[in-house]
Length: 141
Image 1 (tube, one colour):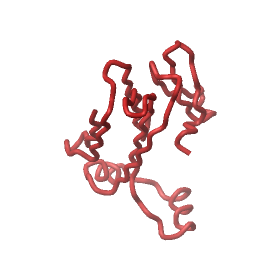
Image 2 (cartoon, one colour):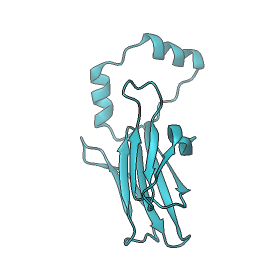
Image 3 (cartoon, one colour):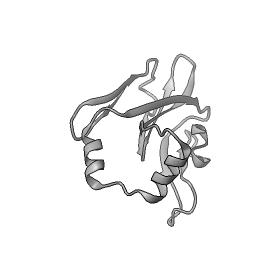
Image 4 (cartoon, helix red, strand yellow):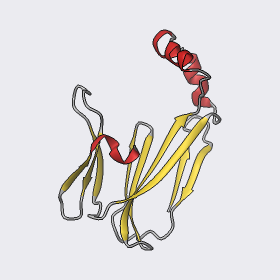
């Protein structure tokens, strides 16, 4: 099974990852939420369900904490800066991690409160039709 992250503006492939030993007779789910892509599948090598998390971030390094705070609170990001970034394929970092989920995964979802007061939670529907919550994307910490 292959996962490609493609820049929607330029059409270039930003990241390409492969997962072998996937049982295509078991449920496979894909969820995209903000910077994260979540894929669940059954791994035939370890005989367990896995949740594969891939995140994409801009790779801008700040030289000082003080400069970081100043940019966050006082500088505005201009629309043309964002547009230039979206058209470039350089300057991103891809994080990927896999986690076992023994009860099995039938479906994935991301939920948050209407007002956005709490952080998002990953909701998993198990093969037994039970709903499990992975709070605040706890697996990503």
